[in-house]
Amino acid sequence: MNTNQNNSPRQNHPALSIIMPAYNEEENVGFTIRRLANAFAKAGHNLELVAVDNGSQDRTGEIIQDLVAQIPTVVYHRVIVNEGYGNGVLSAIPRCTAPWIGIIPADGQVDAEDVVRLFEAVIATNGKVLGKVRRRFRMDGLPRKIISTAYNVFVRVLWPTLGTLDVNGSPKILPRNALLAMRLTSKQWFLDPEIIIKSHYMGIRILEFNVFARMRGNGISHVRVNTCWEFLRSLLRFRFTPVLSEWQRELNSAPPVFEPPVISADQTKSQVG
Image (cartoon, rainbow, N blue to C red; front, side, top):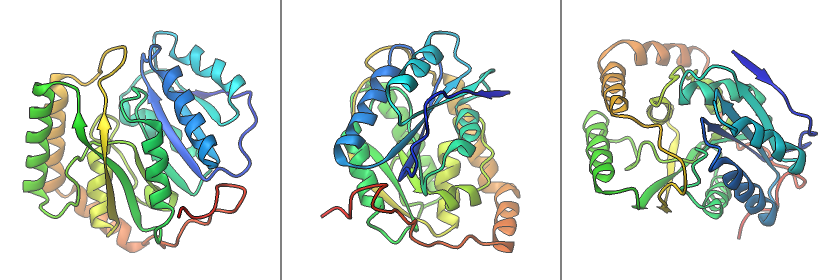
């Protein structure tokens, strides 16, 4: 169940809508939102930042609403009951109005300037591209690195030509029409792999940037041991059951038209040189 509240006027013509799901992120969300908003404003790009209070039980929602009054680019979206990371993202897609849509966690592990750099790269393409980061330099500990490496190797075994070395690396930025055509369904952590896998079958090129991924400054990660089992089950289901083939048949019956998303001069500065 969702309720939407926003007392701040929308940006008239945003170039990029970023969805930021935040669950009990009171220690990080304010810093992350400010950094992103400032970085895009400094670069001259019109950003719409849809900050999702994903059923939080702390002050996350209150902090977001305070920022709405201070930063015109911020849009507040509320999910009353937390049903997972993916559900927070999916529920916010209808709030996005820009031709490009991005997804980023609220933990602030990727520098805001790297997000701007990624956006500038994707808008210089023909539009049939998914821009994402590869967390090449990570500071979240050896056990986490080992698990992540093993997971990505397993994905590569199932899909050898997937085109990414870091399936869960975010932010991810892609054209709005491509995201809608995916008909995403994953309400939990499998949303990121679902986006990558469906992009592969849609012929969408992956543009991957190496970035420095910091440790969480505050708060705790919401990824648990059972998350690994969820990933494993979902990967096997996607690879060896009719789920993916049924989606492909629906997609082929009405394939999306890929054209470069039109961004006017008032949405963003001219092409990056």
